Structures are given as C-alpha cells and as structure tokens.
Amino acid sequence: MRDLAGKRVLLIVPGGIAAFKIPELIRLLRGRDCGVTCVLTQSGAQFVTKLTLQALTETTVYSDLFSLTDENEMGHIQLSRSADLVVVAPATANILAKMAAGIGDDLATTLLLATDKPVLAAPAMNVRMWLHAATQANMALLAARGVAVVGPDEGAMACNEYGPGRMSEPPAIVEAIEALLSPSRALNGKHAPLAGKHAIVTSGPTHEPIDPLRYIANRSSGRQGHAIAASLAALGARVTLVSGPVSVPDPRGVTVVHVESARQMLAACQDALPAEIAVCAAAVADWRVASAASGKIKKTPGAAPPTLELVPNPDILATLAAPGPRRPALVVGFAAETDDLMANAQAKRVRKGCDWIVANDVSPETGIMGGVENAVHLITADGVEDWPRLAKDEVARRLAARIAEALG
Ligand code: CTP
Image 1: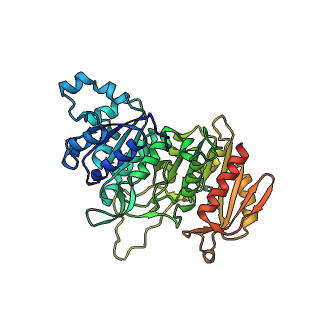
Image 2: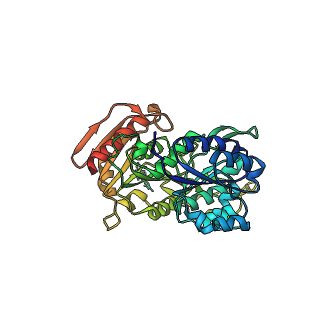
Image 3: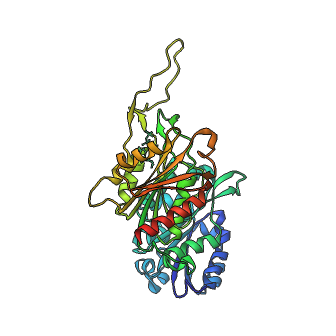
C-alpha cells in the first residue's frame, strides 16, 4: 500500500502512558513512505525518549520553543506548515484543553496555533477525564473548528478502570491519517460515489436537564446513527456526526461533535452546514423542562412532588429540511413508532418536509430500541420499500448505498 507515499506528518507527542504506542505508529507510517517529524513535549519525554523518535523518524526531533538551534534550522511557523497533516497522539486532556482555549505555552501548542494544516487528535486519558464535562466541551469546540478525531477506544485502562479513553491502536490512527490525506484512496480502491459530498448525521438520545443531577432522556443507543455515519464515510463522504450522549465509540474517519441537549444538537448541525446530505437518526427529546433548576431539587417533607413544566424542543429535522439556500439536497428522517407505523411515518415525511423517512416499529416486543437489529421501511416520494430485519450496520450500508444512488 503506497497511499501515504510522499506525504508528511508532523507528529506531536504529549505526555501520556499511550506514548508507548508512538514508535509503532511511526514505524507503520514510515513503512508507507510517509515522512514523520516529531515534536516531543516536556511531559512526553517522560514516556518516550527523543533518541528513540529520532532513530525511527531519521530526522530532528523538536522540543524546545526557544532553542536557537531549532529556530535556526526551522522557525516554529515554518515547522507548523511544513507537513501535510498535524497529528496529536496521545492527545491528553491537558493538550486538548490548551488547543480549545488557544493557549500556546510551549513548542507543541504554539505549532498547533500557528498551523494552517488539518489537525488529527488521538485522545488518550483516564475514562473519568474523558467523560468530564470540560473535556467533552473542549472536544465539541475542537470538532466544530474542524479538528479530526480518532478514538478513543473503549476497554481496560492502565489505571485499572474500564471505559472509553484508550488511545486508538496505531493501525487505526494510520487509517484515519489516510482518510484525511487521501480520502478516496482510503477506500482501498473501492468505489467512492460520495467523494466531495458533506453529510451531517444526528445520532443518539438527547439529555434535557431538570437540575444539575437529573435529566430527561430516552433509550436510544446511537448504534443506527453511528453506523450510518460510518457507512456514508466508507462511500467517500465527509461526515459530521452530531451525537448525543452514547456509549458506542466514535466511528473512524468521521468528525464527531458531542452534544447533550436538543438545542445544542440543532446549533451543531447548523454550524456544520452547508451539506449535501442530512440524516436525522437521533432520538431527540420532544420536550425540555421550561427552566432547569440551577441547584439540586430537594424533597421537602410533607410537600407534593415537584411539577415539571415542559416546553417543546426545536425540531432539528424540520429545521434542516425547511426550504432555503442552505437546505441539503437530500434530507432523511427516521420515524420511530409504536402504533400505525406506516400511516404515521407517511404523515411525518410530509409534516417535516424531508425527502425520505426510514420508518421503524419500536414497540418493546421488537427489541429494536437499544438492540443491534432493525426492520425498516424506506418511504420516499415514489413509494415504500420494505426491508427485511437486518443488523443495524447492514441497514446503514443499504441506506448509504441508496443515498449514493439518489445523488449520483
Ligand atoms: N427529530 C428531530 N428533532 C426533534 C424531534 C425529532 O430532528 N425535536 C427527528 C428525528 O431525528 C427523526 C424524526 O424527527 O428523524 C422523527 O422522530 P420521531 O421521534 O419519530 O417523531 P417526533 O417528531 O418526535 O413525533 P412524534 O413524537 O409525534 O412521533
């Protein structure tokens, strides 16, 4: 495979235990004739040595912002622009926070501020740090600014905890680099009918706060929406996945914006426009609490339980499908119904103004909500296609193929 031949990656190595995977990442990239220049932060040097990186990259490893020698060789502005792609791995909570805040207090962060090249981050940290609201807010901000993200993976961690936070394995990072540097070739020579098209996909539930501890939610797992995002990317589309809180991992090669509430989901979708394709697979909460309490709602002995006043949430699908210059050419919605599936879904297509509706019966006995399979009917202006019960991944592949056919 020579897809990365002649490309150059500037690899920023911050301090995280996952830095032990970096020599393997460099080895894989060099094996593809991809040039690698490393910037090792002070804390990164606690986990991997400059000498190792220098030996593997066969070039200078930079680490000091004020080193005259380095500045003589190459100024930091020039260094930040000399590569085709800047990769941050392992992207610690600390460097991600600095990137989000625009802090440039060492060579690595200064380069990240100065670069005009695409940036890919491979997050790696403890599960609690990854799930912390501050990290998630930083990730949403970085994704909205176009920073691509690979991982993190879910699994056992060096700190003996389990969950999302493990840095993606080097082959997955190479795949993500390839997807950014040669998107159509990353399909391994396969047909890329959606190359050059941008797709926005919503997925997962939304959480609508009642107070700082409690929220209104639903049982959506995000599996179907995430699989659709991955399938559209596999056909060459540039995909922005706007995801509510889910435990399924971020799909590879897709820009993921993590949100919590319906209003945040709508704002992220609007920020991601323009797009040729929109697929709204999220189970958006229809209502939110009119004014969420700023402190925990306490029980008062003898008093009646609190009454929650609900107000409607914005309809993301209807907003994206509304006529106008920024309306995507193809807008696809889902109809999750428990009664009168087809009649309700047909009416929903017209009411929301979308082009297609993927209708599914989510009655508890079907096991579809939260499960791995789906049985759908594709409703278009031309009629209805009944699809057999399939794995959600297969539903996603078929839907992506139908989208490619329609836009082809
Ligand atoms: N949807 C949305 N924003 C909302 C509600 C729904 O984008 N606030 C989208 C969903 O992503 C889905 C479609 O609208 O693509 C239909 O969702 P569904 O829950 O089936 O319908 P509702 O609009 O909630 O209508 P109802 O609850 O009356 O069935």
